[in-house]
Image (cartoon, rainbow over all chains, first blue to last red; front, side, top):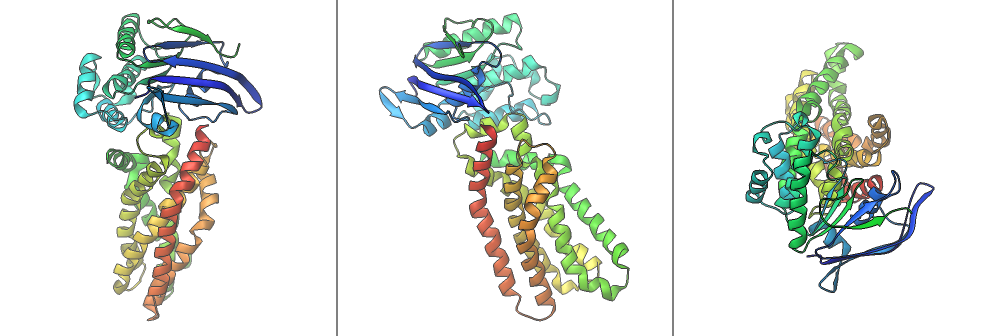
Length: 204
Length: 217
């Protein structure tokens, strides 16, 4: 289990444009960081670098488990969740089929997927095809994956944007529980997160 | 494996799934006599070869969506963060493609060849070569599909990348059938066909995973 994340003098460029360089950030178990910055500042790119989907120009991302470094590939394949702009749900399949696959793929079980649906009040939606779900409902499916397969580092890209006020508050409860259990959260946001989080400006 | 189940379900439904490929194949087989003239003696000569040509083209059909859909809707991110490396993911996708597209085509191929006038004694060999060659088509085509990720009109690009690489299986597959029909040694081309398919199945996943990583970053 990842207990801390250290980003050391990271430089990332997209095409010819340098998004940021010399970016360092440390995060320990139970902490959350809210990445803020203008559109295009590189918040999403930073999350994707942490997830290993983009290679940085310079610097490194180090995951540790109680002072022992964890190989980045292991950390990313076992202990990291990402919610991006796109949720990877296939529109032609039912919500339950897609959720179950995502949960099993990321290390959860059928029982944990059912429990997560119960908690997020998704049961009515499960038989519907994904194409019939609203943006907010799809996001709640993605949140269900987060709690159904326990992984300690959550990378969230605008996690609350499509949710209504009540669901936002509830997402805050889920994040709070995750942090209390020793999890870590890095979230790119424009609105404040519903949990206490350190603000970190990207691209300034 | 959970991924395999999903890939099978997806490729079964992808763009009409196996029915589309088989229908395309049937249409090709129907057009051939219209193009070459219906004289049975003429048709019987070209039947095995053209059955193979049609097979290569039909197996291109649904390749475009092999990685493209997962890339577009973000599922490839999720697959990259799973317990298995992308190489295995790519291999599972191609295997699913083989089972859902190449296997039905391998059943249709001998029927089409016999309808064109090939001898019924050739049916088992046509089916077997189509099945083995189909494995090569899927893995080789998968490389093209992964390389063309993110480009518009990827389907055309795949065809241009992949069709030249389809030359060896077409030569060996059709060659084995011709040799068998002519009473010559047909095992050697068949073994070459197996070698080609196994080589693409062994090396293809690495190329596909590298191309996917490149497309993601």
